Amino acid sequence: MLPYAAYLRVYEPLTAFAESERKVWADYADSRDRPRRANALSAEHDESVMRLLGMPPQPVPAQESPNAYLRRVEDRLYVCPWQTRLRSWLAFSRRRGATPQKLMDHLVPRNVADRVADDFDRFKRKAGSSALRTHIRTTAWHVPPSWFVPFDGNERWLVLGSSVPGQDVKTTATGRNLIYVTSMAQARRRAARALNVLRKHLGDLAAGFEVEEIARWLEEFHPHSLVELDYGGLVHLMDDDALQADQSVAEMAAALTGLDTGQEELAYAMYQRVILRWKSMQQLESAN
Image 1 (cartoon, one colour):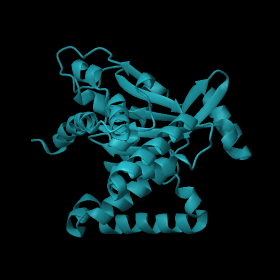
Image 2 (cartoon, helix red, strand yellow):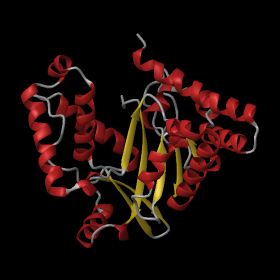
Image 3 (cartoon, rainbow, N blue to C red):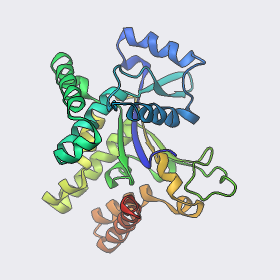
Image 4 (cartoon, rainbow, N blue to C red):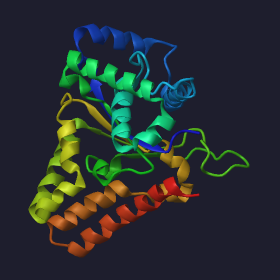
């Protein structure tokens, strides 16, 4: 089973990377041994599971992942590095800071957790803050409303796949995907417009929508990058009808337009549709 998580990814053009990295990624793209897009999530998940099942568990890999998600547009190669080690460090730091120590000791032995924290501190001192930029953001059990803002409803790509015989829709049906892809220019433009609308009509309350954080993150990358929203494992919590009916991107856009044009009822109705859809999904995390 894939984790019930969604992903926001940035693919930078090959020219955005340092010269020493360009050949590495170009050779990687030509390799027959690299994980293909169809099974990349499974490969990344399997790698993490094997580390955590070890004795003692390894919350963070010893080396950075050499893998990446790739996209080609015409003859141009775009690269989204997995950055598994960095993302694991960041996730472990957040989890450790938010979890009571006694519970954390049951999840990961304290000496292992301390070693992971020390390794991360050394990495930060050596590499600097710019090295903490990740190309992938992950969220479990839902998609935050702010993640829909950079996209347009027409950029939606849905593949329902075929259900596994005798099993329910929560299994990993082959080829089941819901993805949005857009250019960085469009993503930044939409995020900036949304931020202006929210600030204009909601003032200080606009901070609660987290659009500014997404806008700032997008500014960290090459202007000719691609931005992708991938529902990931969440598609296995939704049946075909639910996936076909999911128009969260279009509904968020309608909510912002309604707010900006004085159609408060429309704005509220569209926003509520998005919030209630994903709130019901998020509640499955604690379902018995």
